[in-house]
Picture 1 (cartoon, rainbow, N blue to C red):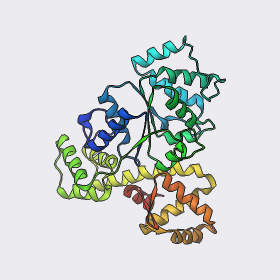
Picture 2 (cartoon, rainbow, N blue to C red):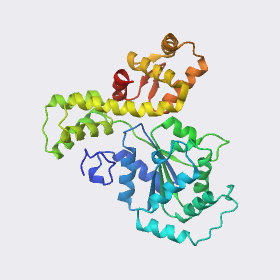
Picture 3 (cartoon, rainbow, N blue to C red):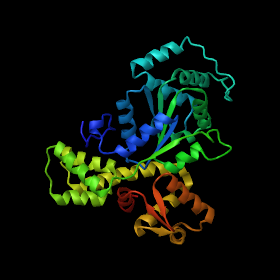
Picture 4 (cartoon, rainbow, N blue to C red):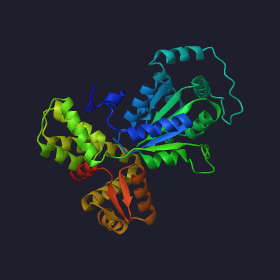
Length: 349
């Protein structure tokens, strides 16, 4: 494997320069029971977590919640957990032992009358001494079941450490409600490890080293252009390098394909808003077109195209887009968080 391999990294030699984040994750996991890893899409969260866990040689279970259905059930979560356990020898032994094990689970504030829930609680108790990684955990909010209660149960009653990760940072914290006195996880100690884009110098170093690994030499202008277009987002830099090395595509075509990919992900997310989707799309188009947009510019633009919109509706739209990581607020203005996505919105949305 090398820097431009598209799959998440699992070995430290393939993992580019995140020593600060690595050390922060190491300290947090050694001192506490719960770590929240955040950062926008393609910032390298999964690679950081997977590489750290493999290098640490601790037992762990990695759950990618994006593999769950759009409406998450307890049974679908249990199937994901057991499916991941079945991928390694110790997990298979654990699952076999659970068939005959009886675990006392009463008194923890969780109802265990249903077979699916009882099975999950038994499995979690059996994971003592390991690390449970829940990636894209904000997906669990799309459920009638209170998965935040399940996380509190793990924290309070087991010797299982938690790494909770999410790229839709606002939605993740909306799900966890760590600062809400009425929420199950309120008051539990946790650490946050936040990932950011690479600096321009580090992004350039990444591209140069990755190209050397591929035995490729390109014009300096190609690298500078990539830095301008991809803004230090390591996932897009990886996509660019991989496409350049394997696909024989021009840089312009790679940028176009990346923008299409980003917009396709956006469209999938916007479908969740049903009849409100056109307003979300229009807000994004206004922000992308202007580069940055104020509240009044957004309201004027949306009403010119789609009719009257209330203050509360516009507030909800902007909050949801920001919490999903598609836009950010800088002072009084809103901008698209990812330049690749911005280009995609302007061309393909």
